Length: 256
Image (tube, rainbow, N blue to C red; front, side):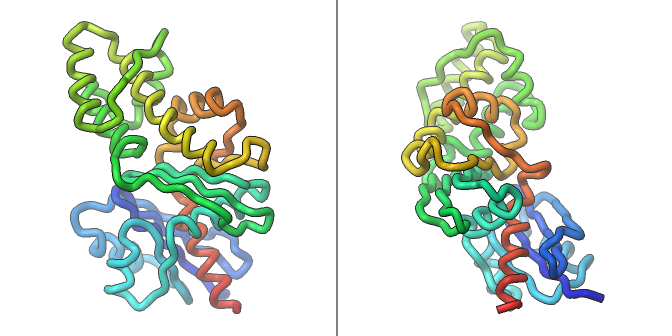
């Protein structure tokens, strides 16, 4: 039996586990909710697989390092490695997670040359979209498609989650269309992250890869492409990119 290498991305909302072989090919992947006891979920996942080396990344990587003797890597490096492996032309990576958003600029060899991170405010994150979807009565899985059905958007002036939620409540009370409010909320996220992208990435520099759970949102993707006038690359399962990158780094570390 060949060697297997694992990467685990312990996020604030979900945990992803990817197993690659010695060639770096994904042979297994798993995903589950983080829940209230992340390490219990991690232990349950790891009990289902065998591996020769593992590397952890994500929101809970330090907790993992304390519980299990294994190396960890920052989300910046993990997403950069996973994005480059999936899209060799990647020069910019946008990752919108549950608690933060980050933009990473890559060199032609895949090294991180620059990055910007928003981790002090929920605005522009998956959590913001989740809270806003709930306030409008939508499931987060349907939120993007509902926003795309709007005939026009409504400008949301508040970037703070608490104030934005209050603004949404006021708009609903005035009888505004929920889909148009939803589109305005999506646009507020795009305005924030597109500013980060412009500061970090040259517009003509290679491919822009969108990773993380929010990359599944079709409205965010459409608005980003329109705002930036750039095509955006999204993997079949963008939530696996961080764990995939960690698994590749575990493999490369073992072979050194």
